[in-house]
Image (cartoon, rainbow, N blue to C red; front, side, top):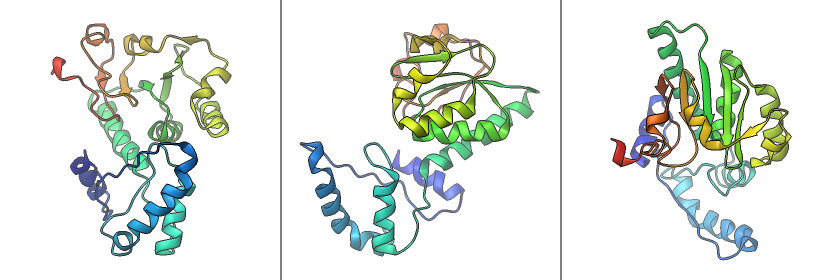
Length: 219
């Protein structure tokens, strides 16, 4: 994963690798103090540009941005999720042109950091998002969801609660993988495509943005 992320950044000529770091907290109340200690530990590595951290699970944009301000006196620019989406959009446009698809219909599993940037790009590219899911269920209306409404709700709630404020009916999240779409985008859990759902897929193409999207048993 770290190597693949390094290649991703290299594609965009960004001098950042894909090294990962994680913190295990016994209690959520320890987060601020632990991040502060971790920031002090990282200081020499960040100053020498040997390691530049990015936002991921459990951290906020501001927590990462403060590290860049304090140590490097510069803004945080390395949005890994954004560059993942830029690569995906290139894939979607290639499929669209290569196979003569005029209006592609997309289904997205997951609406986290990467999903948010992706929906923004789908608005720009005027690509129809007909279904989206999270841990609570799936929203599907058969033609095109209101992407601007999705983005506003995501900004408002910043968690999976946005789904309960959509006007469309919530259906089981597993149904997303059985929908007749042009492109299915697994963007949440690992092993999203597995022995339980592979025979029910009706998509023409799969373009994953999640880590480890395919279970080894189906490869």
